[in-house]
Length: 145
Image (cartoon, rainbow, N blue to C red; front, top):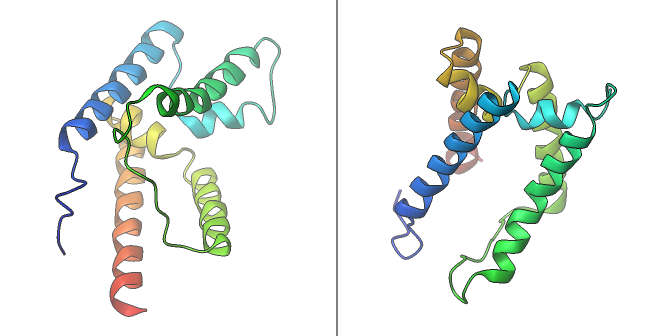
């Protein structure tokens, strides 16, 4: 294993983590809700009265933020995204992640960021499972297939 030192961005990664933590804390303090993306999106599938507007605004903000950054960032600021997988693999992976999210009663942002910070035992088990499964899949794909 080697680190791509040319594209290694520890400070930007740290800043992103801090922003995510602050956003999760602010969302909980100001709205009394957990910042779990699957829960926010899932709430649109069976909406309750008065519960749709903020969910749509949140999801639109998630889409608008990177688009705005791409428009305003100076040339060379953002690394070019590269996905070394075919369309079928991406679709299957997305479906498996969605199924796992439903099965685990939450996603990595809900359990890993918000649940662990609240010392939730269920989130500790879920996050450990996410990480172990991720390690196993990467190992299998890189070393066994």
